[in-house]
Length: 331
Ligand code: MRU
View 1 (cartoon, protein in one colour):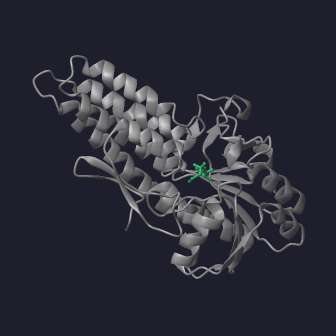
View 2 (cartoon, protein in one colour; view 1 turned 90 degrees about the vertical axis):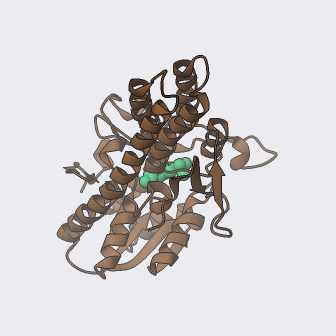
């Protein structure tokens, strides 16, 4: 299977998601500065993929600083820059921290590359873990929906992109779609276009077409209408950070979907790995929300561009991870 990000002969290899679906261009990123830029401009994006990117970044820093006078200081500075590239998805900081921890423990004046090799091994472990997590999330999420809705082809609605492009392999919310499609149980997927950067219209549409799933792209503002008309059996989304109380930060536009699903009595299911659950963040109000360049929303006029919103836990029907299904209070 193709992975959206991996290590390739001394560099990070990633598909430039800003050019999809028009062009599938693979980038070789060999410095931390370039990687930070790739993360900021969303060439690589999606919570699990960002975790891998952060860890690979520490490996790049290790190889670059191995012969410097202060390799530990260089590693710490690189880790800080990577962590700060995007604030909301907890996976990014987690990936950085995991690789940094391993690199520090392996620092060896007699072997300049030991720290880098340790960070790289950790990054590769994250890639393998997230790939297997997604398979488990797919099965668990599919079983949950069929148990609630009955074994029939489902009409699903999703937001942003949560497939292999966001999750390295398979996907979380879109991984559940992939698993259900494998069982012949997807009737149609509505993909919100996901303003302002169109991760839905560009990336999710690309993945659904690749899978051979029947799909329709929707203006974000059309979703509530379809839900109210009973044309959607379940809403399935991913997450960038899940707070200890079950509040969910995800791409801007997710909260209004949850409100509309609640009103319509339609299940609203969040699919995410345990690596996105952040028990150190008590509630959604404590999740740092990224504000991006207003020009992404509108040129030449004042604009506001929060990249994520928070869905309160009482609007969530269930959170599905690779290990557990947390049933919420919503129908
Ligand atoms: O700004 P993005 O494209 O990185 O936002 C991504 C999302 O909001 C995804 O839904 C989330 O990361 C889950 S990806 C499995």
